[in-house]
Amino acid sequence: MSGSTRIVVIPLKKLIIMVCVIAALIILAAIFIFGGSSSDAAKSTGVNISTSTDTVKKNTSCPTYSPGVYTSSILLNGTPIDIQVTVDSDNINNIEMVNLSESVQTMYPMLNSSFDEIKTAVINNGSTDNITYNASSKYTATMLLSAIDSALAKARN
Image (cartoon, rainbow, N blue to C red; front, side, top):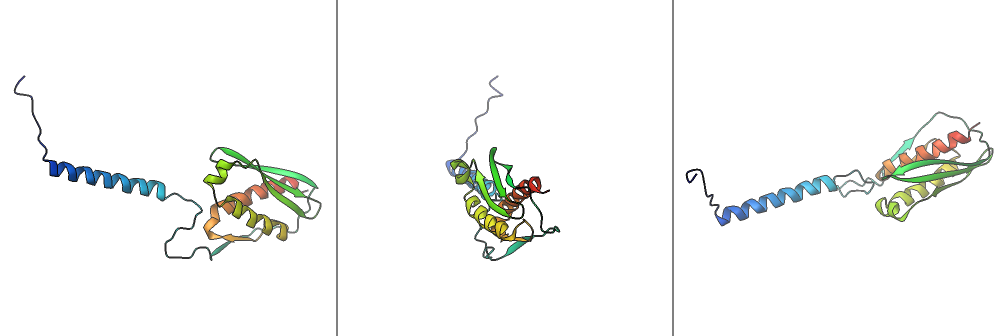
């Protein structure tokens, strides 16, 4: 039994260096994992992406709607948010986000500004065709436009 016991001596300097290297690797991994998420916030990469725009194009003529209020739901982090679209026979009168909790607003800070931008553009355009939005909020805008388009599909004759 006495022959199998070993004592390992690690010099203090090597131990400190090893702990510092491991801590640095953990910090870099955390930055890579949590800092590299696909958020809508414009990252400071030296390129001004707020000036570039994307356009959604679809081939539909001026639609006719059944007057009423139509809803479509989207899930953000497991929380449902309803998009209500109010239409009359020829126009989109109003678009609202319903059941928007403070936690969702906190987690998605660009949601309200993107929604207001898209809401104005869709109401002025009369449909979701050829809507232009900032590239910095591409994913949010795409999600909102698909929800609005889903509600409008329910309203079409």
